[in-house]
Image (cartoon, rainbow, N blue to C red; front, side, top):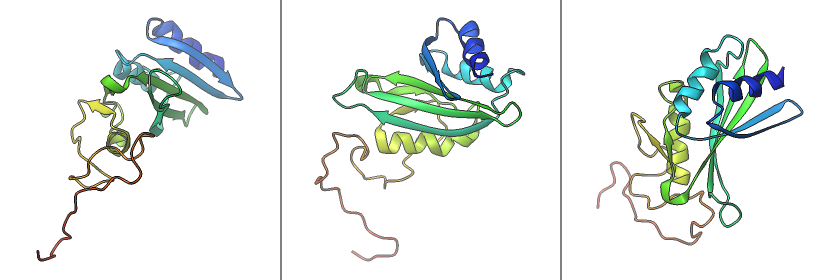
Length: 163
């Protein structure tokens, strides 16, 4: 069954799939960001694949180990077909952006906001691209491996606190 997922993905998006591998039921496809929303929609709507549960979205920072620096990682599951797939999109530090998956899965709203807030990867077309973990005045993205651990942040006031 797992070969079917990667084979169908490659057959439909041959120009968008960079590489694939499968290990113990964990299918992974590295895909280009160009048609990401179309690809995610296909995985959701195709009757043979039926990926109806977006499980997770995160970012991996390969600082000084690989280029491009970041990978945006999507974990999807089909509750009816009982298979899963992992999609990875490589993005450069200087162009750290991917299309938002919000139109396909509104549940990824918070995941995308968290990924932007903590890693600095922008999700183009997201309806509420604001911080979710850190306060609005926070400078930088704290889960980047080059974030200075002793960096001082601007102070904020608590609600109701008098200056």
